[in-house]
Length: 290
Image 1 (cartoon, rainbow, N blue to C red):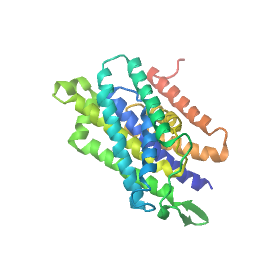
Image 2: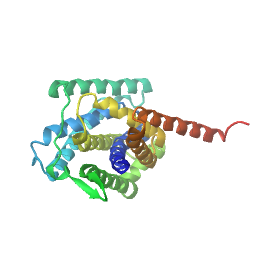
Image 3: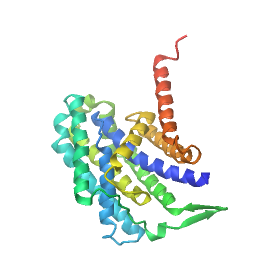
Image 4: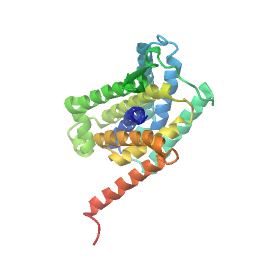
């Protein structure tokens, strides 16, 4: 049973990383904490729900095509939000930025309730992913394996773009020193918009891929954003590799914790976050006072 939970934890960790990576990229470049990121994840799940019955229903190719189209749709919405609203407050007080992103949370939530209603929905799983792999005496569901592999492919592509392409070099330059990047003639606005679009796309496909594994409802944003922020705090805001380690830690802890401590699984995660914060604080101070 524990091996099955570990596989489920890896899948949840991968989904958390796809969400948290967008969150941490946006913060690393624009220094904006986007509270609406969970809403973009929720939107990806609902758009997948709408597209799956239309594109080759019941097939794996149709499911992933629906997920990618949902991600593109979410990226377009995120880009429009960045251009029309966030771009005007980059230099403003952080409270103003916070209010605008929270306002988007309520707008998306109301729109979702208006279109799809308040009841929970379920996204049908592709027929080929409904079976189980038998390893020894244990039956492992196929779906988490496939979703973990698909997430891994997305992560590899993202790291490849960031490390080995001109776009990635510009992104790292803007993350390290925005002022210097601007002095070198890098179009800062274009970088901000591209990063917001990429982060929204990642949130959208994470929502779409995870949709068949649970209920899809208008409260999904709140559930996800808390875990995503915990991952970012553990990994360090703006640190992509830290977010990957934090996401895996949170995903596995939640999955295994439910098995042994069903009422304390979230407490364990908050405990890990507290330990990381204390350790980081002691590191900055050069160790405990004697």
